[in-house]
Amino acid sequence: MRKARESKGVLAVLAVFALGACDGAGIEYPEDSWERDGMIFGMPEARVFTEDYTGPPVVGEYLTMPPSVATLDYDGNRIHEIRLDTFVQEVEVERGNRFQAWTFGGTVPGPVLTVRQGDLVRFTMANRTNEEVVITEPGTASPFLEQVVDNPWMAPEAAIFPMAHSMDFHSGTVAADDKWRTIPPGQTIEFEWVANYPGVFMYHCGTPSVLMHTAMGQYGAVIVLPREGYPDEVDHEFALVQSEFYLGPRGEDGLRSYDHQAAVDREPTIVAFNGHRSRHVVEPLEATEGDRVRMYVLNAGPNEISSFHVIGAVFDKVYPEGNLENVQHGMQTITLGASQGSVVEFIIPEAGEYKFVDHTFAHPERGAAGGVIVVAPRLE
Ligand SMILES: [Cu+2]
Image (cartoon, rainbow, N blue to C red; front, side, top):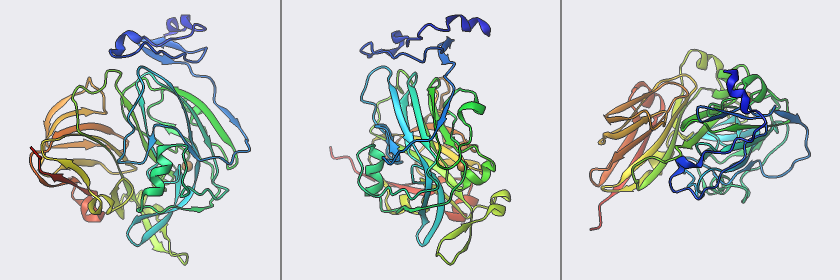
C-alpha cells in the first residue's frame, strides 16, 4: 500500500493513452496526490473558512436539473470548479403540497453534476441556511439556474432554518472525516476529489440524523462518464432520481411538516421521480419510435428499494452502478437499493405511451414513482 506513496510529490498527470479521441489534454492533479492502479488518491486537506459571498449559490457549467443531463463538450479531462451551497427553500412535491426542504442548490433533488472519469472536482459549499437565498431570478452561473427559472414544478421560495450540514459525494474517494465534515451556518468548505470510477453516484448530507437530513431533501446525483464513453449511440439521455418524502400534517403556514417517525417507520407519503409526484406524468419525457434511450437512474432513498421498470420496454443493456465492466442484457426490471445507481438503455419499439415505474407497487400506490415517455411515430 505504502509503495504507491513513492510517487508523492510528482505531479500525477492523466494517462491520456486511454482516451481515444482525446486531443491529449491532461490535467495536473494536486501536488501530493498519488496514483495506484490508474486511480488518483491523496487529496489536500479540506479548508473551512468564512467568506463574504453573495454570488450565485450554484456555479458549474455541467450542473443541470434532472431529467436534463449535461453534454461534455471537452476532450480528455478537466478541472471542474463547482459551487453548490446549502440553504433552505419551500418546494412543491405534489400538487397542493409544499414543504420546507433542506437543499443543495435550492431544489430537491439537487443539481445533477456530469463529469468524465479522471476529472478533478474542486468543490465549494457555503452553509447559507441562515439567509434567504433566491434562485428564481435568471442566472447564468450554470445551466441549472436557468432550468430552475424555466421549471414550473418546484417553485422554490427562499426560507431560513439555520442548521449544520455537510456534503458526502459517493463518487469521491477521500477521508470522510476530513472532506465530508459538518459545517455550521455561515461557514464555507472547500475540498477536491477525483472522479476515479465511472457511474451514477449519490451525493447527500452526512450530518446526523442522516435519515432526517436526506429525507429533508439534501441529495442529488453525480454522473461520471467512462473515459471511453458508453459504446452505443443514443438518441436521448435522461437523469432520474427517485426518492421518498415523509410528510406530516399541514401547519398554519400552509406547509406540510416533515414526519421523522414516518421516516423511521419507512412509511413514505410520496415516492417521486425528480422530486415531484406528478411532474413526469403531466410533463412526459419525449422520444421517437425506434430511438435508443439511455437513462441514468439513481435511487436516493433514503429508505426504500426501487424496482425500476419501463412498461412496454425491456432494458437492452444495463450497466449496474454505471460501470462499463458491469453489463447485463435483456433486463425487465433493475433493483436499486438506497443510494444505488444504474445506467439503462432500451429501444422504443413503437409510437405510444411508456410508463416508467417503481415496480415495488406499494410505491406507486403511495404516491407514484411514475412517469411517462411519449413516443412519436418515425417520420420515414
Ligand atoms: Cu444536512
